[in-house]
Image 1: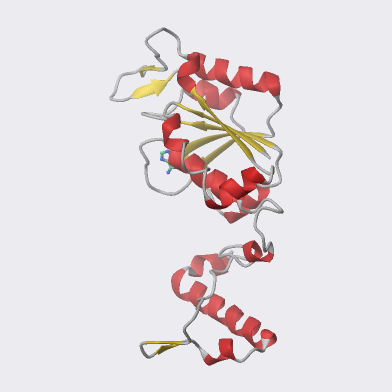
Image 2 (image 1 turned 180 degrees about the horizontal axis):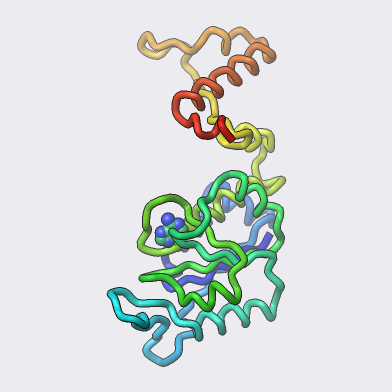
Length: 225
Ligand code: ADE
């Protein structure tokens, strides 16, 4: 999979993909990430990419011209399966969207700043608008990082033990069960007996019950879906 990201602050995206599972995905040739500085397509030598909004009001809007030139230049190299704009007024992101996106070959993500991008860019180019939650970030970069990370880790072959992604929270609309490691008794706090007995079927049943209980307590909304 190849993901291109257009950003006014590409420095914010320097580290998130260079470690751990995202690094492994890149090293295995399964995920390529290209971050582009929008200022490369600025309208003047001052690096201008935004302007005041029509109708008045505080906050700048990212202009049509730099974004159009950036998108169209990248489109000349490849056709994108999705052009995503990350924005607090987009559809709320979840595991199901991550699963769908992980099946795509080429994705372009546009990060907004300030008041966001000119609506005409959304109308003309954007195929999916995604919010990572009901709060406002200072820019789209961290949202883009969340999306790339959540997609990257479920590309087949990225995780060593592929089944581990299948048992993540949300994969079956359930939260993950509690997990334990050594020692079996830590300062009097004991690991549940069933996990020590070596019966995989019983362990599986116990985990399922725990998942269900956790979901009922913390996220009953997931069970309604
Ligand atoms: N940009 C600013 N806030 C955001 C959010 N919650 N989701 C996606 N992009 C954003």
